[in-house]
Length: 224
Length: 224
DNA sequence: AGCCGCTTGTGAACGCAGGAACAAAGTCCC
DNA sequence: GGGACTTTGTTCCTGCGTTCACAAGCGGCT
Image 1 (cartoon, protein in one colour):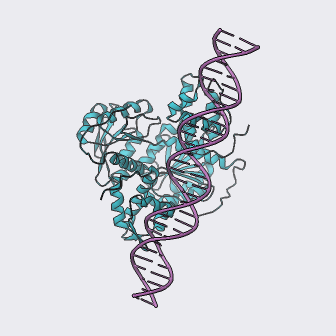
Image 2: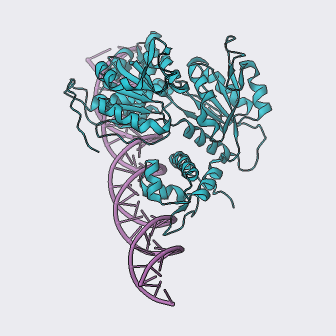
Image 3: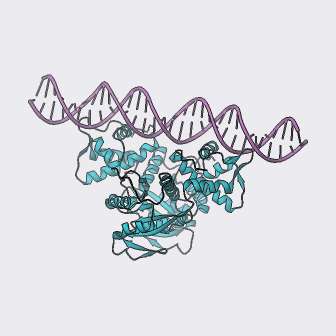
């Protein structure tokens, strides 16, 4: 019962996570089976693409019927590695960091923040949820003690690389970076970047491109 | 001097936004010219890819010299449509919404929140930064009055679609969605999705895949 | 038991993004 | 003024992701 260690495309993995969320909702609603079409619709993707994504983990549906909601959910949980709660540390307790520390969407999906860090003395000692903000100096010790494998960086850009280095050296293998700088990490450490202002700027571009001439008329073409 | 309305790939637009940020930093530091190699390094991309991205907006560098920092910055500002501040509204003032409302990275990059909305009476009236949280009922009026063209949704998943519909009907043309549901919007309205828990789950998958057997050795191969 | 309809899983084509190598062009130096 | 070096802009190519379309398999009905 090996979980198919063959390479699964990263884009597919991202969608698998979405499928898992939809399946969880369906399971809570009492559904026992789903078709690829319905699941794809709920996830906002193409049915054929969904089937191809699922094919990466071997046959897991029944032809003529669909997918067993519970079984597929468990399968995805195992493949994604969120079966047991994963310990995360969060560095940089500003506005964004505080929000993430309190964000319910993480805890209910197999992720648990085990420590919060900040460099500012005024932040240290504050409680967020049921965690206390700790001094950055304790980072290595806490990471080692808790065995945290994921680090989230919400610090200012200037110190992000330094924090990244320390996290990697302490044994963290995955880093989610919200600071607007590209991070260099040693081999064996994955870094994913979320850049909020870039998202807005892409929207701004798409929005302005759509209106090359007129810029004041409120005529909005309607269509499904 | 039309700004090349020819289609620019979305992936390129996202990188242009990154280049713009780097250029702004360089300009503040007094630099007058940059080479593609240096700029690419700072942005974390391939030099050839950077030149290809820039080629979408016509020749804007000088061979043998590089790019003029100020000129390229202004060019990108114009192309991305962030020259004049764009009015944004934010709906859903929970932890994440509050953080975004206060996030300095937006205001300094051509985006300005002009209104915050929430459905909860306990939130309405609160001040965040220099804005007051308003009732969701005022959404249409405020969007019309301010001419906001961008909406940010940080509500619970259940009401996200309804908020999306109302924003679109009120004239918002671009929506940034943090709620974990796919949104359907009328034609002419762009929707971009940011799913934080998906990002973490992708990291979890990559992390577990990398360690199929050993799980404790701190041997970290160094590289770049 | 046999047939039919439904759904999955897979194979192939299309389009796009990414990377490397090459030619054009401008500047600096002699 | 001429040559050589530097750096851009472009072209080609490879690989990946996405989509469409078909064959295989299973349940339900007669």
